[in-house]
Image (cartoon, rainbow, N blue to C red; front, side):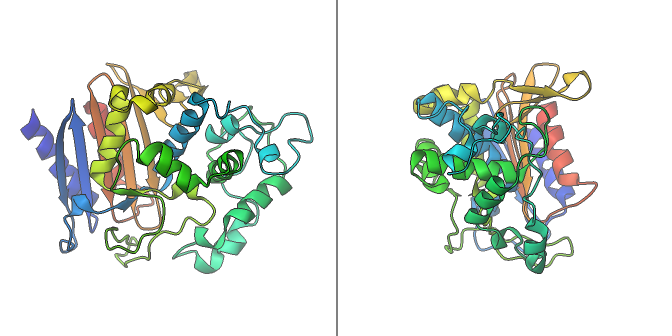
Length: 334
């Protein structure tokens, strides 16, 4: 029941051992939110702050692509290089928008030369030193390492390039597209894709507890720029559970549940254009995690139980992560 779930959320908050942590669950429309932390309570309630969700931003970018496809603006088969003013491919097999969002474009995790440029700001804001024009130039200059469509390799670089390709195809920046086509229709007023110095953002911390400046995604907005309140993240997930809540997005919300890629032993790793998809006894669960230098997030939903889960915290872990494990377990058991 609700009391048992609330107790489990309290346990997860404590186990996160972070300055701030929020675990929020929506089950068949009823929300339970628990928050706490090792730091003194901030001026605003923890569950009303915006948290950096890092790579979980990719769930928004995947939905944005399917929204543009659903509206007939794109097909997903467009060669990204052609949209960005380069030559589609030297070998006749160009990396398409669909390859980029599914991490099959043959690209490395980060652009060639990224580390050298980011090194001076490695512990504060490495991505901020790599703007959008550099992301695009690196993509156009370096051919894929593998033939697009043949291998899966998780790539922040690829999804960042996708954001710039969507902007080129529509004449509208990724931030504006995301606000107009996702945040506004879903009424996500506690979500931001821009830097807002309005005092609503949670402060990230290093492992040693030192506070960090806000994350600057540089040219990687589509791969990691979203900051959102736990309540907005639940609203976003509830729309996936019940697409009728957002009629304009219903087609796209259905599309992002569809498996497009299976890999690994026995094909047990299944991907959609926006989510990792794992089996449970009752049906699939969908999830994405993310992290910046000083914050972490986990979002996911289970259609069979009508459950959505959003978890955020303001410390980054490297190994034996109690936060991610607790969030996944709550959804898998839910």
